[in-house]
Image (cartoon, rainbow, N blue to C red; front, side):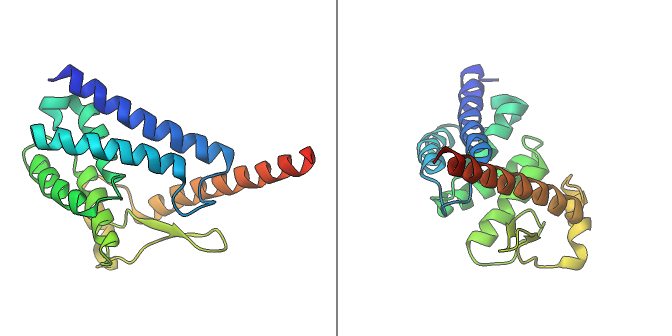
Length: 188
């Protein structure tokens, strides 16, 4: 295992998740289409993950360790500024899954993200949105009657469980946003 690469990937993941959590906690997430703070992290991570993939190919488990491989997936999952690169990584990740170098769950999430971003229905139901009433729902699914079977094959729970988890996160974001507005009103 390449410890330096492992540590670098974890650092990239940590920064992504730290900024995301700060935006959730402050109620800022969702106030603009693509928050500039998280966009800045994604831009920086995109540049570096492209260099890593060019140098090593997909940073799988034997190269980057299990945590490092997961961090690489998360960084690519958030590389929404370059969908072409995401597609390249999807092929590399698929091969890594077949070779035992990556998790099927990660492939499912990236596959769905690439499909949705290209205007096509997803396969595994990993991508959701929230309507104007705050209700979470999965984005279009290619074969809804098979989705839970396909999810199980990739190591995912049911679609209903995923939607419930996303609903809880959406409720937390909404509560934090309301608390932030309340605190600003009191401060005036």
